[in-house]
Structures are given as C-alpha cells and as structure tokens.
Length: 209
Image (tube, rainbow, N blue to C red; front, side, top):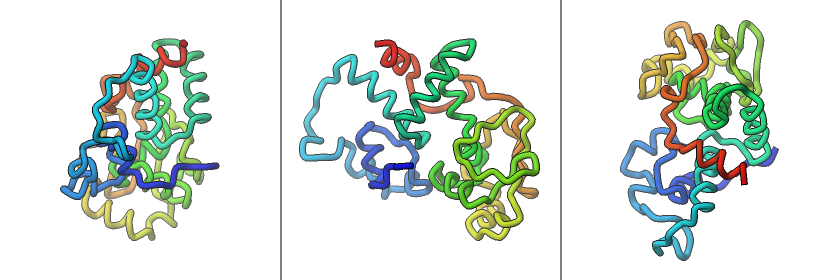
C-alpha cells in the first residue's frame, strides 16, 4: 500500500502544531516547528484566513496524519463509525485508537506510531497467543498483547522496556507490564481518554456535505 515517505516534520508545520510523528525529536529544540513555526513552501509565511470548508478539511488531514492512515482507510473507518450506535465523531476516534500500532505507542512500547507500526510488521507482538503483523488490527476489551520471542531480541524494544517505557503515563484503558512486556486492553477508550487535538465534529460535517 502506498504511504507518505516524505519528511514528517513538514506535516506538523502544515497543521501548525506538533503531531509527535518523530518520537524524541519532537520533544527537543531540533523540532522543525520550533524553528520554523509556519507552513512549508514558498508562501508559507503568508497569513491567510481559512474558509469553513478548509477548517473542516484540516481537521481530517490532522487526524489522518496523527494516526498514519491513508484516505481510503480513513473513509472506511468513517463508514464503520456511521453504522455504529453513538456519536459518529467519537466512534471514529475510538476506532483509530483501537489500531494495534496506536495501542503499542500509547502503552509506551514505541517512540512514535510509525516506530510501533514497524515493530508490528516485523512480527514483534502476539495477541492472545497468536502472531499479528497487521498494524491496523483492531483490539478488543480483554485482549492480551505480548512481545513475541523474536521481539524480545529486538534491541530497540529491549532499551525501551529497560527504561520503563516512553515518556507519558499509559492511558487508563490499558494495563501495562513493562517487566513482562505485556499490555492488557481493559476496555475501549472514551472520548475523554483520547487526547488528540482533533475536532471530530468538523470531520463529520465535512463528510456530511
């Protein structure tokens, strides 16, 4: 599947905020948006007022970039969200949070979602005793995610686990054991537990047009 392979710092600059796409660099003074806090390109320094449509589009692009999904994937998630009881926007974010690569990142087993995606593809995790190498796999309550025997030999994972995980505290809907390399999904996240800077209502408005 095609995927954006350009400089991810440009994506943060385009959205005008840190999307934390590059791990540790995002927390340092080397972060591009700290040095150049304006959109990339020849006309990036010009201030322009966004139309209502552009504001809605930006929210969708922001969500896609944070979670690392492409347009077709995103539309599929939105379609599932519309057919799920409850608020469509909240359902959409909950689906994105349930992605295996996001859960690995949220638990503190990876520095970024992109790094988590690579780990999953390389077969470093099992779910309920079975190997899963699909980053978009949607976890369910009571799922047990464990580092595979192959993953336990991975130097990056070893370093992260020995240091007690990456930065932020794991969300309350996950139970994390760094010593054993396990993640238990306690329940699905609520909107209050999803700390992404996205206005999901604008995304719903965009698709309603």
